[in-house]
Length: 390
Image 1 (cartoon, rainbow, N blue to C red):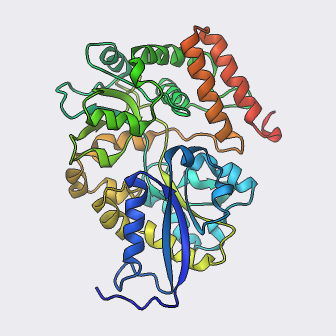
Image 2 (cartoon, rainbow, N blue to C red):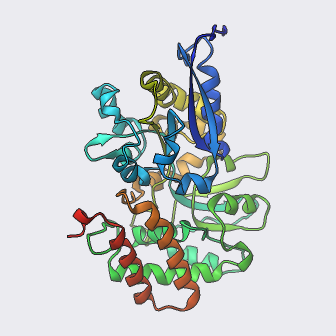
């Protein structure tokens, strides 16, 4: 491929997150965009900055939008971003036919999760959900149901779950989604009392079964320790394809546990989307980069080749990609398709943090399940905008 003279190119900046899964595909595509060929973007260049996972999960999109043209975002932050006018609606920049095709092009609820208030605010570039993980050195078959998972956690093998905020809450919600197949928050509660109490009881046993030295970890820390042999099993953790093969021992991923064999896996939707800052002075150049990064060619070739986790359904269904990455995609796609989408109102991110802290405190202090769920639902109601508190 021939190099292109970029002396007069516009310079754009983007913000992504610091896992290789988050930055490696984007930096490689930014490099290819400067070269003559199928990924070339003429007239502009894009430089990526990296944000920690903690920052990615908690920093308001409006803050990141002040100094960047393109943003990798998490869908639960959409409501706050729209309220603060931090993003450009893609409906005004991308042909409507392209946007309408995204729901079929991307796996599960990925595209719909970035639609809010009747507009599309981002395009999926990475699809993820909670799944189960086992150390590659273990010989047991991955548990299929929560009963089997609990037996494994309370058995002789070292098991752990992520409890760093917001992951205590997200684990609770993954369990609730397995228990109640049509989990639907209302103006009065995040989860109904019956579902909440049962999910809390199971979560309590999982936390009690997690050794003290493995409490307070996020998913990346859980998976790092699993590669090192310190943890053998985690029943519910966000999947990271780049852990499914070397150079360290591979982690084996499988679908999240079901409440019973005839139910769907209980999982919370993750992943990321690519959005355009309302502060950009180069919106049309930003659109060109956004469309290149999210197109099927990039998603099925470049993204998986450098350890990214594509959002395109074509990638998840590709046997060669699946074989190359330890069957991560075929073993977890049911969780991805059935994953529960979190609320996205403006107060959700703060609630997600505070609700997780309150839930872990209740689990460790002996508070009754009913009192813990009442506290969680009270915090949730307080997070809702006034017009949603009916």
